[in-house]
Length: 183
Image (tube, rainbow, N blue to C red):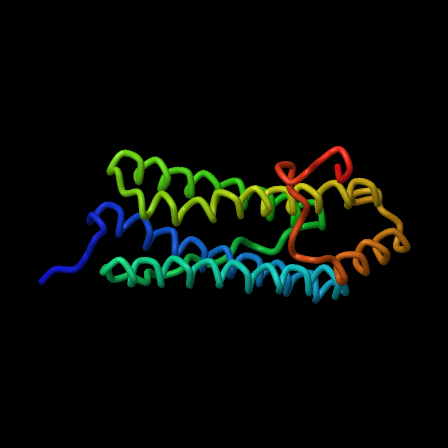
């Protein structure tokens, strides 16, 4: 008996996203290695943690596909981009990657609505929420670097930024949780 409750299109879209999350993990790992090599151990640690989070997202997709009776397909993962030329390029790359990932997540949500696959639609809402956090986190990186002076930041500013990111949590406050007492 066929127990697969995913359409072929949905199973492929979810598998593609699983692989996209693995690729994101490799990109952030690569950026982390670049930062570590440049002496930014705090930024590297932040990126390494982010790489692990992306891998965990991949596992969520894998498990969901299996739980719905499908079989995830692991594809070849493209090589990460070349090393960034600067912290600005690194953080811009993180932001671009997150926005691209959000677009891919939205495509799956759209497909789930077209197919009236409410289980997948419900599953994807966690990722919609997560992408709000991921994009905010990436935007905060860019903002912090700008405040520090961007690519012309002093060594002292970069040292402080590096230390701040070493200790920064992986989550960010979200707009929908804001209140007058807790903006």
